[in-house]
Length: 76
Image 1: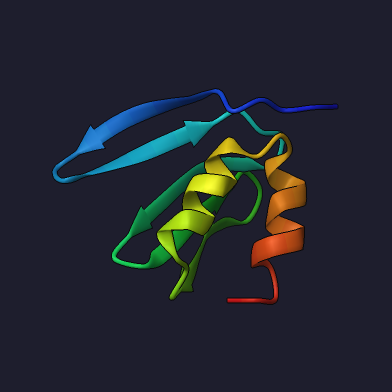
Image 2: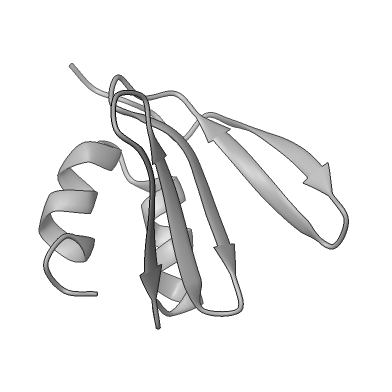
């Protein structure tokens, strides 16, 4: 199953929270180098010191689950 880069932006104060189309990931937020990922089953996990370029690549990944496993999980 492939997932495109479709997401909805919800504005809250000074930053945007994209709700993503994914079977495991509900929302992705990046604010001041902290990446927050909301999973449908387990809730939110925070990853400090994640560069903005990684966040943007994550949003645009064909498979966010695979991007998470390859580029975020265990690295931050």
